[in-house]
Image (cartoon, rainbow, N blue to C red; front, side, top):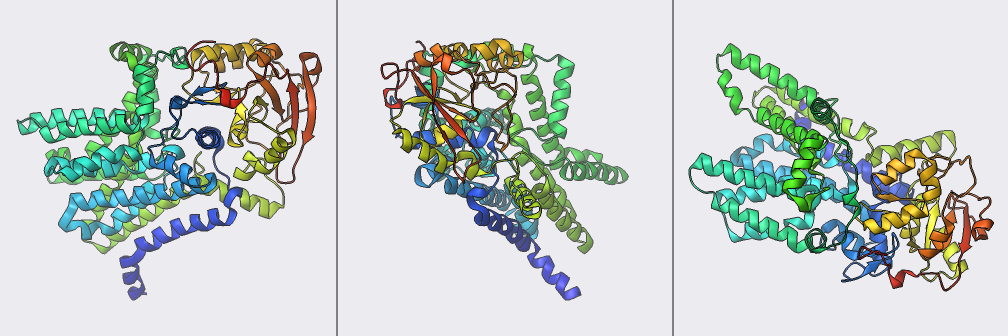
Length: 599
């Protein structure tokens, strides 16, 4: 037994990595497109956008209009110069998604280990096991899939900047210039530049000389973002189109409510940036602080607490959470927008997107402390804590924990021999059914909309849509779309607030007030009437209405039922309605009249 434990002490972290990654590989490669992948802000957003760019030849197009939301500027969608985008350019969508999923794990783990090797150099061998294990935990986190590589690469950019600060060298400036291929300006780049500017100031004061290397790095990194995200910067700086950002209404909290919001961000995972720290990592870090305070207090060396890395990381976390809360404090947000007008509507609360890395950096330092005790029991406790952290991540039913949800729903199907209500990838996009519909009608790019059928399903399958989901499109189109959904908009207060004060999800809402766009197999609708301005639908160039429901009274609105479509592979029954005449139809190739801010 003793010999077995000694061998386990040497290889436990490789077993942990192989077990966690191998289990996920087995699950996703077994179920493939029957995997239960998150729809919210994922399959209904970026994956659909990538398919729009693929279907309509938009990836590298300039001055082009993409046929969603009535025709939007190509520059409003993702840059082609991003590694995650490149996966969808080169691979079929599901395999691009799966490749990105595992690439995030390996990038997060690898960059975490490389940063540790840079920091500890000669002592790297002492901490190798916990660096790999903690890096694995960071890579496993169920973060926003479209920006998973951005999260995962944070340790890498810190490593590059540290090399520049200590040694300089052209190759590190070149690496920094190309780093934005892994990042995204609006979510990470702006904050990296802000943090870097603060570092230049602080280090210049501390070292009593200007930190020229990092100042140069600031401009190199900014140049990289501008180069690889030139579409975004052209929209931000040079477009005169008034967008929906100008009319978005944000929560306006009081000062004390803002503090409560910051407290929640510190204690609980923030959507899109789930760090799963509450069950284990947070308690471990707090216990360490208490223990370390007592330990140093007994030795009358409390001043050493000021040098504890965990203390500074937790202060950084608190700062990020405070900024997060201040975004919802209207007085501060209005001041920010007044000082930086181009960033009106910009969500500067995304400082919390750096918190997952910070939590696991602090966790590593606690494990490092245990390793430095030079006691076998302390080392094994650290190993056990690392394994427990990985287990917490894999078994927590977080929104983007797609491994958990795939295992859960497939197990449910197997045990109870029945279908679950949630839709998997294959069912959600229903490509076989959509191919049957489009082939039957001889589809040629005419604009359409979905009712109960998410426009992402239409976009994924190559249909030009009047509806859609995007956080940046012309205000003129939002106003036109509001007239389209006016009957439901005026009837249901929830839709008036939801769409009127936000507007990113331009859907045909139900006049009964029910949400009919959940990714569910069974989704009932109590009122079969269509609350829609049919004349506006035709004025906007719409021809087809793809409905999951049989609608009543639509003949009086100028719609005719073309046919009802089903397919054994799909949970949908599509009632395809048609309206208008050839003179009023618009096709995707012809673009839209709203891209330049007017009708």
